Amino acid sequence: MTTNQGIEGTAFSFEVLPPMRGKSIESVYRTIDRLMPFNPRCINITTHRSETIYHELSNGTFEKLSMRTRPGTVAIAAAIKGRYGVTTIPHVICSGFSAAEIEEELFDLSFLGIHELLVLRGDRARGENRYTPHPSGHEHAIDLCRQVNRFNEGRLIDGTACDAPTTPFTYGVAGYPEKHEEAMNLDTDMQHLVQKIGEGAQYVVTQMFFDNKKYFAFVDRLRQMGIQVPVIPGLKPLTTLGHKSLLPKTFHIDFPAELVKEFEHCHNNDDVKALGVEWATQQARELRDAGVPCIHFYSMNAAQSVERIMRGL
Ligand code: FAD
Image (cartoon, rainbow, N blue to C red; front, side, top):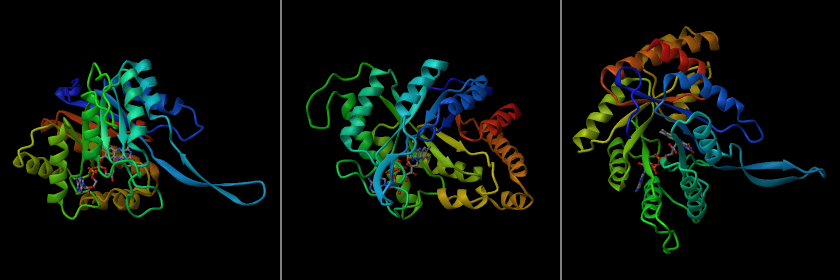
């Protein structure tokens, strides 16, 4: 990842979610309006798989539908790029998509001049307790890395040739300082990460963490494994009382003891927001002083906090 250096040599990237189905893009623009003054290296846009929903019919029965609750990643990436002139990085995921659908997405992105991707397996379907790949899709992110590599070489999934993109796609992948929830242990998880890098990933963006020691240990281990690519720390500002249980449960991460103690003193969301800004600012300062090339903020629904953190830096 080349870095458009921000404050004191460290670049910043901000992640946004597409709006809920049927909602306008204005909330995304409002978030980015707040963050553009900090000269982000890029804006990431998440992708969300389709979910099963039950639609009530007039006769009282229910129709089972498969629907994406947050569609529009590719269009939003193009809209943000056009409006702000900033590099956009759409997340491309396996979950819920066939390889053919992903291929269509790569065509669209290539035509739109969007060449940087974050390649991921994607979350499992809501309500499922294990990930099930699409019958004509991919099991792991590494399989999608390979599809992108073949596309770059001018090969389609059915083996036929296509025009190789003039600007090949480059991509990053996800890494987990506290281990991915499904991995048997951190070592095997990191070996899988090393394989994705071997396949061509140019950098790693980490899952959120609240204890920098975990990030530094993770990077040290990767370096010992011979990996030299940038490892971009992902920071999430705490904003609601619900984060206390939701974040550890959803992302399989630990809060350090000191943060737990501080959280106990929060009585409302405003208290949590103040704590979140203070904690993330301390984390970001330490990471910046350690010379990380870029800090990635999980900024959707937290634009005001990220703005305060950036000012604090
Ligand atoms: P993988 O690399 O496939 O790893 C998943 C699990 O399989 C791990 O336990 C790994 O150890 C194991 N594994 C990997 N390769 C192999 C192999 N070859 N053989 C056996 N086991 C293997 N989710 C979304 O749905 N949309 C998003 O936009 C999105 N953005 C994200 C952004 C970031 C920065 C991060 C950190 C996560 C994001 N996620 C997103 C969540 C992510 O998709 C999930 O954490 C998912 O469960 C794993 O994705 P992965 O790309 O790490 O998968």
